[in-house]
Structure formats: structure tokens, C-alpha cells
Length: 113
Length: 112
Image 1 (cartoon, chains in turn green, orange):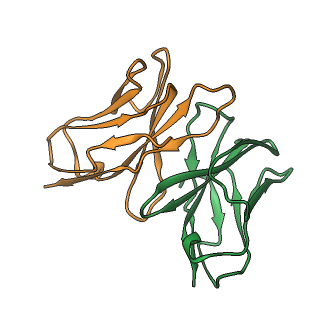
Image 2 (image 1 turned 90 degrees about the vertical axis):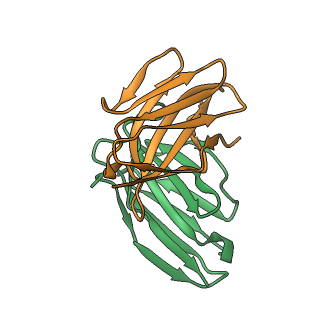
């Protein structure tokens, strides 16, 4: 158990819908990262937050947005969902940005039908 | 740009050694290695920094050739528990680049 929690574990929704994925980082960690993992693309970095501020942005679609709240939990919002958004979404946390070990949560499996 | 890992897959018998390579086309500041078992989250193995510093587990060894933008992960005397997919994540040298770009992974299977 990494200490990072993600909810929900599984999510099945229809195209065009909007969903919110939630992540609570490990106690003491200030940085949160979001990744998308699909079979053919591996782990894709989406976005990173540090102490409430956005620090880095990767291949995140405009339909996706995220934020980190004062209590350091983070939410990833996915809207106008398409079939291709079906994937495993991981949240990870670390003490700070940069070269620190990232602890991954168990992931949320999103299926868009 | 996504780093290239090789081989894509490898099968070992217990006790055999393996090397997994990670190559990037851009200048790197650090290379991170993670292992992911089927149905589980990735787990940290090691970080190699420009300049030679390493952070990670004592039983895992790796190298980082800054000039060639390459890293290799060495798995010796493999055990069944080593099975999984190994990912390298690279961090560029741009200022404030806090994001990791992961390779597509190397699937390692250790058989008795």
C-alpha cells in the first residue's frame, strides 16, 4: 500500500459525459501527478501540482482539467468523454517536484461506452 | 519525446541476468525506473541523476550515460518476483521541467 488513495476504482460511463476522479496523496507529500495508461501508449504524463499550484503540463487534452485543493487532495475532471478516453488513470504523489520517488495510487479504470 | 526501451519483452529462467535499456533523443537530467506488476500500480525502483547521483534500492543497479542519453537497468540472479513490466521515465534538462516521459515498457517474465 503506497498510501495514495484514488476513488472510484472503476467507472463506466457513456460518451459525451463528464466524470471526476479523486486522489488523496500520501501524508506529507505536496506534489500530485496524474497519468493516463492505455494498452498501446504506456504511461502518459498529464499534469502535476505542487502545494495547490500547477507545475507542469503534459499531454493533457483541453477536455480534461485538474486542480489541487488546500487539503492537498486533487481531482481530475474529464468531460465530453470519447471512447478513446477509456484507460487506467493513475495519481502519484511525492514530497516535492523534481527527482523524488513517486508513489502511485491503485488507479481508476475508466470505461467509456 | 518518448524514450525507447529495449528489449520489448524478455523471458528469463530464475537465476539468469537481464539488462533493460532506455534511450532518449534529447538531453536528460535524470532517468527514473519503475516496475509494474499485472493489475497493480507502478512501484519506484531507482532514480539516476546527471552527475552520477543515484537514489534507489540497494539490490537494483543501473547506469546513466549522460553523453549518450542512455540508461540501463541491471537485474542479476533474477527471481520470480522480478516479473513485471519495467518502465523508464526521463526528465529533460529544460528549466523547471518536472515531468517524466515514460517509455512503452519492457515486459520481463521470470520462469522457474
